[in-house]
View 1 (cartoon, rainbow, N blue to C red):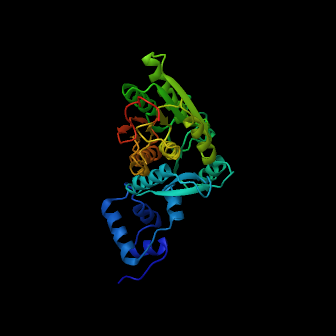
View 2 (view 1 turned 90 degrees about the vertical axis):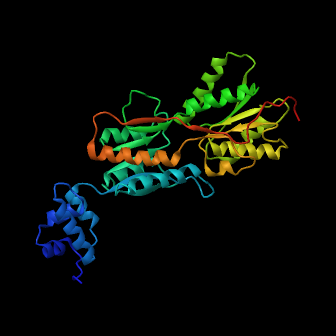
View 3 (view 1 turned 45 degrees about the horizontal axis):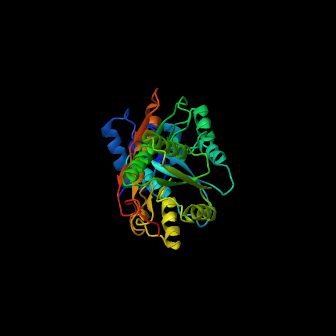
Length: 347
């Protein structure tokens, strides 16, 4: 068995090659002949050599890592969306030989400050930015720095050029309204959030446009709004909507967690879904299939979107394309038992 080597210099000496050639061969640089790359890789395996990431970065100019900032929202928050997204992103990166580095923004701390540290420390070759605000200082900073990034979501300013992938929430909410309208519903509820997030704006605009296309003066829309991560305020807003005899017969929620809360509070109020109240969500998180009677929702393909974002970002890092990469994905309706015809009488 060959003697174990611990440094790049020792490995290069054992192969009678320059340190630069060995480092580039281990990094997979195509300017190094394939036979040489294979020879170096085999020798490294046999000698038990593990490449030093810092040394590789000095030679290639890249760390091999992609960054994502995770804000801490509180000890009791369950974020199904983020779990699927991180899993898909990691899968997409690993398939290309890259790795994901997670940076945490503590509760009450600025995501931008953490993002700045990730960028300026040189720990990542690019970053993924999620949950885009209508005006987002993170994207402005990254574009000003010329740092590779892909956003999951859009800004309201369509003239701001950047790389993004998004799902077409406006189309989905129009489709949800049309389906419920055709089932006889005329009194609708919308459960939404108070934060200025672009996805909120686009989905609500899609609903408003669908209502407008019908031109039916009998259609009514009640809106329940609460801060996204304040469960107590969310429950209060939903209960105000559901109380009394003049309540909506159908509720469309901005995303599944809100829709699941609507179904929970409806059950507590003695309402049966969908006999008394139809409910539709968005995202198709795992819990939506199991919450009785099964939540009708739209599959946003969160995990697949994250994989595609990984592909896009690695292309941006490697090629620096002149034009921004953009993609809009249309979500798929997943009909389950939580929606049905409008009730003829009130219980």
